[in-house]
Structures are given as C-alpha cells and as structure tokens.
Image 1 (cartoon, protein in one colour):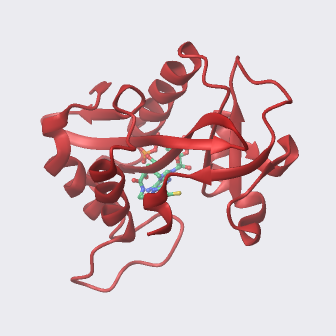
Image 2 (cartoon, protein in one colour; image 1 turned 180 degrees about the vertical axis):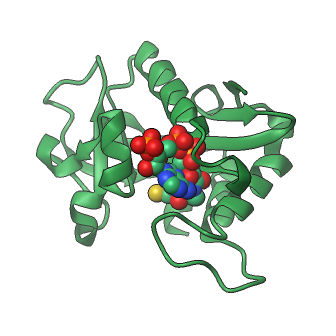
Image 3 (cartoon, helix red, strand yellow; image 1 turned 90 degrees about the vertical axis):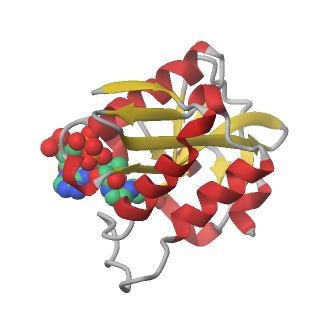
Length: 175
Ligand SMILES: CC(C)(COP(=O)(O)OP(=O)(O)OC[C@H]1O[C@@H](n2cnc3c(N)ncnc32)[C@H](O)[C@@H]1OP(=O)(O)O)[C@@H](O)C(=O)NCCC(=O)NCCS
C-alpha cells in the first residue's frame, strides 16, 4: 500500500471510496439502499469550490485507490488552519492500517508547512490516537455548539495559544 498526495485524476476514484466507505459508516447507522452518503456531496462541493488543499490531501493505493483523506481550508478567528474530512477506506480494506497511514501523512505534511492546528468532528475513541482532543480545551469554539467534545483539534508544532476563537469551515460545509 502506498500513500501519496492526491492527484487531480483521482477524483472519480475518491468519490467511489467515500460512497462505499460511508454506506456503512463505522460510527452511525447504515444508509438506506440507493442513497448517496452526505460525505460524497461534501467532497464534491469542496473540490468544486477549490477549497480542498491538494498538498495535505492523500490517496491510498493498493491495486487502485482504496482510501482518501480530504484536507480543506478553514480558520480559527483570523488564523488559517486546516479542516480534516471526509476520511474513508474501502470496506474490504478497513482495519488494516490505511486510515492511520492517511492521517499520519496529513499530520506530517501540515506540520511541515507550519499549519498550527487541524480539526474535525468525529468519534473521540478513534481520533484520540492521533493526538486529537476536544477543541474547546484549546479555546477553539466548534462551528455548531452542540457538537461538544466530538469536535476535536490536533495542535501541531506551530501552534500557540493565540490560535483561539470560533472555528470556521469553508462554505461547502454549510451548503
Ligand atoms: C474510519 C476509517 C477511515 C478508518 O480507517 P481504517 O483503515 O479502517 O483504520 P485503521 O486500520 O488505520 O485503524 C484501525 C483502528 O481503527 C478502528 N477502526 C476503524 N475502522 C474500523 C472498522 N471499520 N472496524 C473496526 N475497527 C475500526 C479500530 O478500533 C482499529 O483499532 P486498532 O488499531 O486498535 O485495532 C475507515 O474504517 C472508514 O472508512 N470507515 C467508514 C467511514 C467512516 O466512518 N469514516 C470516519 C468518520 S468519523
């Protein structure tokens, strides 16, 4: 398995990964047959708006595209930061370390580029292993207050306590 930066012609394969991965998401009930997972539309909207950050978004290859993590532009108050998500792995390949490898690649690239912080909503029991913790512990206010501790942030080397305030996603997240 190889993890490499996302390329423009990965688009259709990435859509397929999210469609399959989120048909039976790990942390919520399975979808009705025939419906398209929300995450496919989110990925499309971010891509079309130019808010996906290609140098922090990674594709996993193993006899074709089997996983992907999306990084997008975001801010905390006036500081530029990075939002993570969706992340998905084809069902037959889950539980073999691909999701972890994708997250490690994103973390390393963002850290090397002096991004202060990355954030996502998700299950703390999965994401805490990558150093995420409730964003509000860092003074980062979730975009939706009811997300509570599920909105998590991962401070990187360039983080300072001045990175605080309301987290704002790219517009695609609210459309
Ligand atoms: C979540 C997801 C991206 C993780 O990728 P992955 O390649 O399966 O995860 P990894 O193999 O790197 O990590 C495995 C660990 O994650 C957990 N895990 C993640 N997905 C799991 C799954 N489908 N079944 C069981 N455990 C899973 C396990 O606890 C496992 O822990 P361990 O290392 O202690 O055994 C992937 O399973 C996926 O696409 N799931 C469906 C979509 C989804 O729920 N995305 C995340 C939304 S918050």
